[in-house]
Length: 272
Image (cartoon, rainbow, N blue to C red; front, side):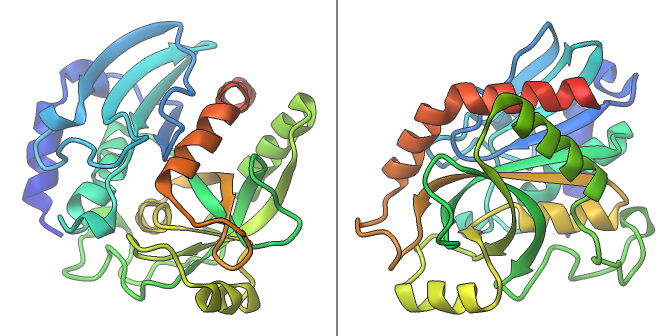
């Protein structure tokens, strides 16, 4: 990856964004962009203004960075993400994590919308990630090694921190949400998976499938961040669902679950 791209992006952020270490970084996936409750906004600007990032190109991604205070905690949130399938390389995909690292952030919440593979799941359920499967076969750490991004061969035995998963479970229990632990299968997209592929992923142990999250998680874990992963099941995966899959279905499911998503994140922040 081109470090100069990250340097230029970091130079865009005002000094106030680096004055205090954020208590939490959040990267919001499809449909999650309006899930934040804010007491005080410190900085706010669109992705399109950030060099090397560029505006969000996918519906359901607001494409906005906001640093704010909530419940006495400082939060740095990325409302929307860039994806590998957009074809701009790894830099815009992991740039939000790199900026958080430079801010001194140590804890990261990754959210997404996913297709349900596990037969116990139904649209509107939440899955707390305990692990993932990288089906793409490449990751953003390929290339020249930089010491600031961790060791050359980072351990991935516990990408998603157990303590943070326990906090998410406590939130779900208090809010009365349907939730389970699960394994996330990462595909490159932008095509949805075939029924045969879904059955193969199921045999490998996947509970949900999606086109994001894993690159950011891999990079963040290599850099030493503690990660929580939270997925909203927006639809049933191909061959399990009896309907033709569409992104509109993802957006509709997220809109329905929006109050629950906002409550989930807010309760998690309060428990940090």
